[in-house]
Length: 263
Image (cartoon, rainbow, N blue to C red; front, side):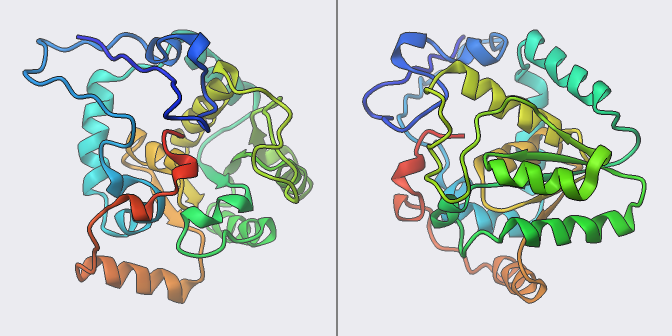
């Protein structure tokens, strides 16, 4: 059994590979191994489960960690990142001096706000949240994954040597479009995103907004504590809404077509 994952005209804004790159799964992961082939072949050009992405993902985060346990078991049993990427993560973690606990932060470009229930908070709000978490865990390191250039500078100025951030990643200015990172679509961008996700998955806490990377990190490490960056009262309301079953059917209306196929 194998996965056939290709980029085509149906995913014009997918940036982690091109049609010329051929089959993408084995560019990032080792071949899948199952005891037998499935009885039904599944083919899709979009998400298999719309409730895990876009505006729907916010409600999923609030409904507890059951989905993380389920997907986490499947991930642990079948998915293995290519060895060279795992070595890159090991080297960054070791050379970054992370010792003990770590607080992960995924700060997205504000142009992604249409995928969230409300505007993505500014980097200053994220920094204040990070400081608050550090007061509870004073010896922790900070691991930052971001597609915003200024966020790296602000976090480095604030947290200094406590900060681990993947170097040489394509990032856009906060005042420009999210795609203004000066790098062409391709495998290199996908490797950067996957390495960031693996670094965040090693943390004990993740501060985030709606994101396919945050979702993936959530099941890569089901024990990770996920904290959605939003005001406390909004946090409580979102939790109550989700727990009381106020859930709409997941449809493409809750998913931005600009991000279909993106991680």
